Length: 294
Image 1 (cartoon, rainbow, N blue to C red):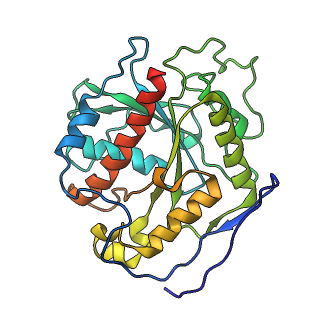
Image 2 (image 1 turned 45 degrees about the vertical axis):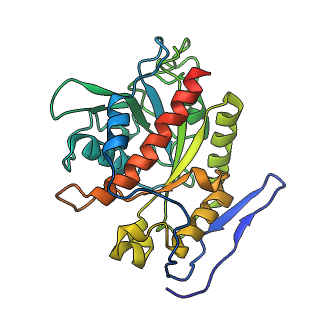
Image 3 (image 1 turned 135 degrees about the vertical axis):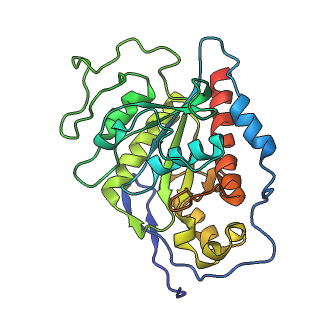
């Protein structure tokens, strides 16, 4: 990859400009820019499987994923299922209705087809797009727990209190406890209209005190060195630059942005893929647990 780059254009005046991710030169350094224990997944796997909220009024940490078209939100949920169940699976989701814009809660089974579920759940909403896609206002309502299970999002008509899909009295369990922005490290950029929606969503979450983080997907496609060996992820200067650009674009601190590789064409579990997914997942659960305890 060449050494050219384009500017990350973010102004402090409230206007958000188009973000073009810099095409940093592909090379690795000897010392990783973030420490991680490769292949030693037993402790993190035990933590995410056995985690349970201390608040008796809350059954699970609710994690809301949002991001641009093609970022890999649904693939991340499927990858988490694969990690938890110890096999690459595509059928572990309890629902696939989010693909057509329905608000659904995804529970993660602990073992095969048993009815034992982890105490964290995901909500995956429609992609943020130019023109159509989900309204930022609907995601704001979801943060507060006002969107009922099974509600069909309508890009041209945001949810209102008069709508049957509106939940007027959300419980603590209905509310979102962690907001996660999903971005593709292989993406050329994020348009200004999508960035504006993302900024609105982040601001709403900040006002509610909801913790936020981000994951960067498709790291193997974005970086030749990481494609050769996933352990190069935190030695890659190219991906380090991507994390800096993501941080500048969406306002999430660099140490709260986690590169991951989703399972795609693999047929067997890979320890290194699991390490990155578990690292991000444990952070999500920890942030949610801290928020619940408050």
